[in-house]
Length: 116
Image 1: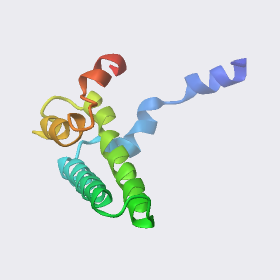
Image 2: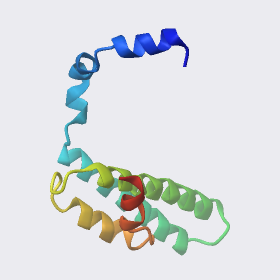
Image 3: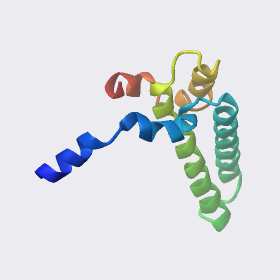
């Protein structure tokens, strides 16, 4: 890194930059639950629709693709679980494991040890 960039980085006041956005780091259980449950409901409903419609039709592929996106969204919470304080969102870890982690064979212990 060039010398000028090092001076700029050291002159920044990290605490002053963090203050205006500190509310964004607050854990809001309502948002976590709403996001997880919406993603799970969409994912599972669309997945079961893809099982019921005729294979290789537009309905099949569209429901399967949308289910994949919903499951991907729900799976991304594994990263949040690695950073959440215990009981910051009561019951969230267990619910995630039951709704997403175990059925999709991606329990949190496969991620937490590596990430943290």
